[in-house]
Amino acid sequence: MTIKETLTTLPQYVLPHHTLSQLMSKLTHCENKLWKNLFIKQIIRHYGVDMSEALEPNIDAYASFNEFFTRQLKPEARPIANESGAIVSPADGVVSQAGQIKDGDIFQAKGKSFTATQLLGGDVERAAPFKNGSFTTIYLSPRDYHRLHMPLTGTLKEMIHIPGRLFSVNAATTNSVPGLFARNERVAAIFDTEAGPMALVLVGAIFVSSVETVWHGVVTPPTIETVRTWHYETDAPQLNIGEEMGRFNMGSTIIVLFGKDNAAWQADFTADSPVKLGQLIGKTPR
Image 1 (cartoon, rainbow, N blue to C red):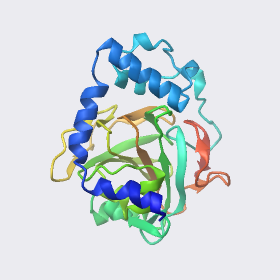
Image 2 (tube, one colour):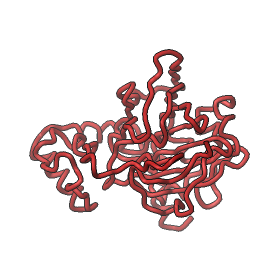
Image 3 (cartoon, rainbow, N blue to C red):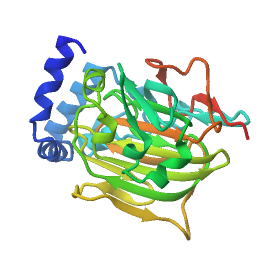
């Protein structure tokens, strides 16, 4: 951990994470045209957002900054890999890590890790199918498309909302805060797929005003003190590979888990590599 990373991270321990995120939610949902257009233009300019990919390139058409931030893309902007056994990227972003879950441990950065059990809300039975499996962590920056899509066709079995802090999930904080992704508030969705169980974990972060899914709507807020769980034993949502499954209202991180020998990442799918939604990132053996 560098001095710069330390100075970036230490103040976050005392910040009122959820209060700041609530304030950001009010700002990003404000429909004042002058304010929201100024905010949108600043983000486009600062981060180099490519609006030619947007289904609606005219920023005046967005009622709020959040509508712009969660904008749809043109259908042809993100082709979905269609090879047999393909696993595709669920998001635009940068690979934070990709590898094996070693005896339940998931590598975070620079000697730091957390367990699948911690990540999935403390339930040992829920985490058991992922022991010695595969994982990837993908970070979405403000320039990226912020809807999340299915890496593989699946049937939803369970959704879990796990309360927690809202540390930043940028590289400096990831390198500095132990067990970061298992400490932040998050929403986990467990699917049955042709490759066995698959978990998609949507990790909140400071200034992330909410996380939502297509089958439930907004899951958080509210933020509560205890874990909430939904089971889908009948009429379970079925989502195809590449289909939208959720979104971040402001950016964050998605973590994908597979069971042992159920996914093999592509050779070039490694830490710090940029990825695009629908890109081939791995294969299933089935």
